[in-house]
Image (cartoon, rainbow, N blue to C red; front, side):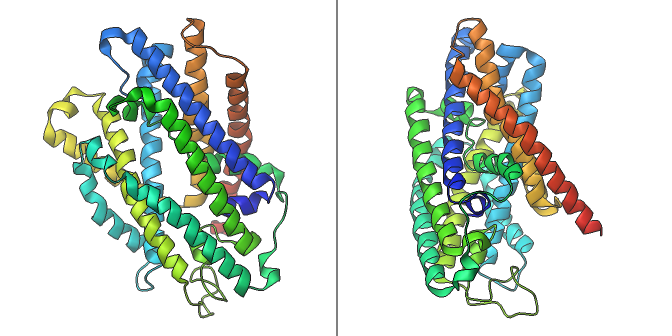
Length: 389
């Protein structure tokens, strides 16, 4: 809802839809490249990671760079998820800080490092589906409650964004909420019916985009431009939720819909984090025979990865500003520019086609990266300056 509030009624939903279409198209390009590279590799079989695709297209050095950036991005993504879990757990208690709740989430989820089968992980997929419906229902009911209880002046809204310069950065953050292209090679390799990847990609993006547009619009309708960055922190009676108001004021009563939403978010992320971690583990393992053959070395690697995610969640300052930088740099590079780049390289050998849709996607990616990264770096510098003042 906050991203729609920053974009306005017209641009916000349209940008969410465009981000979904962009992510879907980029994922289909990756899938097409995987099929082409599998044919080129012959007996070596399907690529284990997008780095293997980059190696065929650009050489061994590019493989190392792509794998390093992919692992870094996925670890950072898990760090974001741990922060969100901690924030949602914090809604239930005033006796612990959000950081302490994050530590509880990590202690509960440390068993994830022992999961070595995608079949085991996939058994929790239904939780994500159920959670999506709960998201829409809880945010929708809370939005209507806000309309009924909050004064009109506190729910102002706009049709267009107040600052057009922030549009690329906002779009990158929206794209971040989709972004499956970097994990697609690992998931496809382990699928029983990999030929169904295109259908799965399109259906999943359609479902997720529909849910995002619906819940974001409901949240913006309920609270207007005053909706919190985490919509959960708007779900309180006046004067507002703890952390969103002055410490001198007594916070309002928390809403039942907030408790329902926070529970659904925690449940969903506790089955999402294992998928991302599984892809990280498989990518790292594919680069070392020692990690594949030695259980102790493999376990040490897995624990190190989780600790890296936790460190990002707990100790990185200016988290929101740095997330924006990650979204406009690593995300756009891996989710848009890389799929377009490997498609172009494979087209030179006649393996795939590279036409105006791919060219348009590449242009969009370059625009978002250049303009959005400049804006996000400026915001990060301003945050650092404000903290030092």
